[in-house]
Length: 231
Image 1 (cartoon, rainbow, N blue to C red):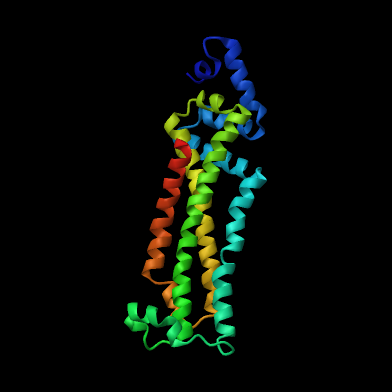
Image 2: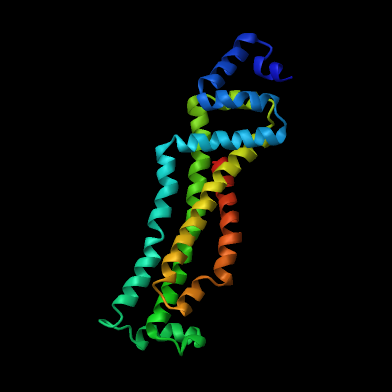
């Protein structure tokens, strides 16, 4: 069955497909596992193939590593600057009166803490952008890269089903987005632990943030991949 799909009724065309598969070093090494392996082996092989192509693409690497390095700087900079210079240019109650009015429980907190909590809460939007950008970029480049290298058709000609191929590519695109977001959030928490007060830190590690990180981030990554595949 595998030979029929790869060889085709016209042997020349099948040999051409097989040659293009083997021309790509990573796909060539993966081919025996895709052809002879079971569905789980095929899925694992496709995911590893995608990871290998990500590591070989500098633009994709920069897209993944960049947010991990840049994003934690923002909350750390806000936390440090508002803490270090609060005595020089104090943040008055008037500046945060609107926030305290909306959240009365902050009334007993120092103005600096209120300002930091409000600013850090806005950072959640930035953390939720990462699982949209990275998976969308990876998914788009995955399809474009396969077409450019002319390896998409040969890959579809293997015994791996279309569902298995799409699932493998999707998981390989979701993982970097989720991993990068969680890593950036972890770095931010570790740094802020030594900068802000316990009250501010608890506001950044409450149930809302954990729901966002553990539920919204994976869902947004999956949504981004679906958009990337459709486009």
